[in-house]
Image 1 (tube, helix red, strand yellow):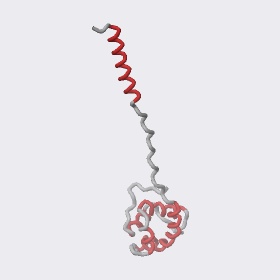
Image 2: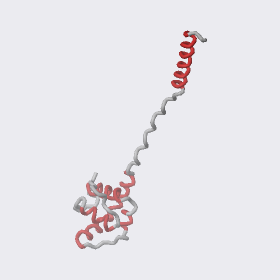
Image 3: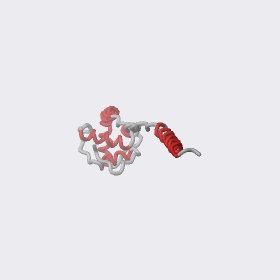
Length: 128
C-alpha cells in the first residue's frame, strides 16, 4: 500500500496540474470595441440647402396667407432631398440667420411648409 506521504504528494500534484491548467487556459477578454459614433448631420449640406431655401420665401408667404402651394415646385423639390428632421433643422437655421427675410412662426410655419412638401415634422422637434 502506498504511504500516506505518497498519497498527499499525488493529490498535491493533481491539484497543481488542474489549478494551473485552468488558470493558464484563460485568455484575457478583448477590450470592447467602442460603437461607432452616429453619423453627424452634414452641416455643409445644410448650408448649401439654406441658400437654396431662399426660394421658399414666396412659397411660404403665399401658403401662410392664402393657403395655396405647389407640392411639386422648386421649394418642395429642395426640401424633399432631405429627411424631415434635416429639413426642419435647415429651415430653423435659415430662420435664425434671417435668410428667408420674413417673420416665421417656429414650429408652426415650418410644419406648414413640410406638410405641403409631403414631410411630417418630427414629434417633439425643437430648433437647435
